[in-house]
Length: 257
Image (cartoon, rainbow, N blue to C red; front, side, top):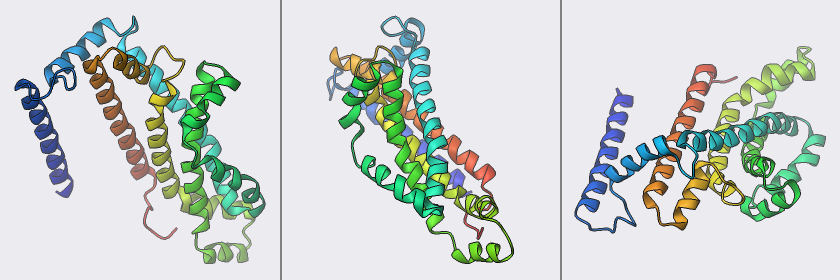
């Protein structure tokens, strides 16, 4: 019942925003260049689906952006989870890795994007690397903190019963850290997602982020709104899928491991 109430409130809020948006544009309170009407944005969306933008169909722009994001986040998961868990479990690995991550973490991705282009060129490697570096620290830190806060009594009890370090890691530490790992994946996906427009800002010719930037040069606010709405809906769906997966597999969340 609370979920149904929350959903109804969210839908009502969305309807109110759309109605207010339509009223503002229908009475010309705001210039259509600054704020196109919902009808115009929807018509532009249909035109982009059929005619494309810059000769490329909208779905291809979308798939290019989504592909860059998923590859980068996937690589960050493959690197960040084992490195974060091992850093929390093994002081030697922590001493090597943690300073590097802590150095990268506060730097805005655009600060080193030009270096990545210089080193890797203007193609996909520089864009994916930028998103990867944006997504890596949140996953690493979540995994690291998850291991640090595990009850030492559990580890000592398992060791006293004859469990090896490998068994302790895979049967106690990893299951206990899984809820925090999913939290880190959600955070990393969000951080990488907010960086996608920056990644497609320079030396790109396709992608939703590039489409938004290119449209801004010609004051095509309707195209910009289509891109922003597509990105927003996709972000909501990605977060929902991660939470759904977490609820499906992490049934012990909030319980003592």
